[in-house]
Picture 1 (cartoon, helix red, strand yellow):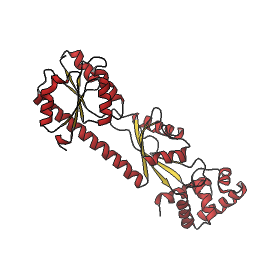
Picture 2 (spheres, helix red, strand yellow):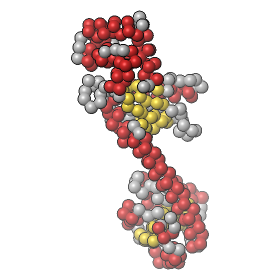
Picture 3 (cartoon, rainbow, N blue to C red):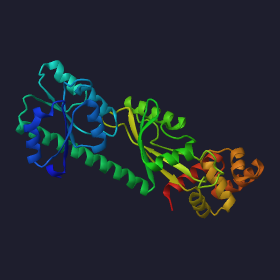
Picture 4 (cartoon, rainbow, N blue to C red):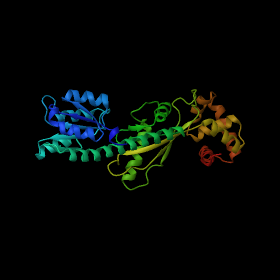
Amino acid sequence: MNAQDDVVLIVDDVPDNLAVLHDALDEAGYTVLVALSGEQALQRALQAQPDIVLLDAMMPGMDGFEVARRLKADARTAPIPVVFMTGLTETEHVVAALAAGGVDYVTKPLKPAEVLARMGVHLATARRARQQTQQALQARSALDAFGYASMTVRVGDGRVLWHTPLARTLLQRYGGLGLPVVPAAVQEWMARQHAAVVAGGAGEPPRMALTPVQPAAEGGADGRLLLHLHPPMEEGEAGELLVVMREESGSAAIALLRDAFALTGKEAEVLYWVAQGKINRDIADILGSSPATVKKHLERIHTKLGVETRTAAAASALGRLRQGG
């Protein structure tokens, strides 16, 4: 991208004072827009989405500081770099400009060559930020395409800071909740993991599984959602964790158990739900049978697996499922 692709919005209530700068920008190939007031600047910025704003600090009515604050408060204009133009060089004014969201300031009377040089730096920085954002979005879409939903969660309150589209669907199906917060069970698990890691321990197992809110419902509700928890991120982001989720088909897992242990279809279903930690009464509800029938199936499963306890049967099933097909 070169200057001919960039749009500059100049905001000043006396634009004639900036005639030399306007001409220099035009000769350099920039498209130049002008706003004569704070209100007009906000409208132009929203409509034109300029690549950079040159903003007069002192204007009647809405001054430049308030304009910058409003630009940065709107997600649609927040990424646009703002360079203040001011005749005020006292420290308090410079600090106010930067606190309002400015990335730089130039002093009046303006020197066009200096303004162009500083603009070039900030435009390049903004361009890299846009590219990184686009790459992040493409990466998230790629995760979704391969069935791996992902999200970043703030540990303290379980709030989802960003997520892929698939993550929302899976959380609704398996947690019974929509964003912006994760299900309570997930938040508690993450909090324990984070606390242990911060304390220097190993933490909770980095994986957990959720079964659907209504396992017997239609639409793939025989599966489970596997969550893989990444460790805390770099300093400054220690309270955020990345979670990658993958939906596993219950039908495929049941077929695997059936073939691996020479079970009947119903026995494989019972063993699958035993491995998910369900008690006989819950399994009976899921399969539409009685707890007594589930118990009989489980007795035959013990015999075929060569185990004596429910726990041993579940361990054998989970071990085989981890190995995959």
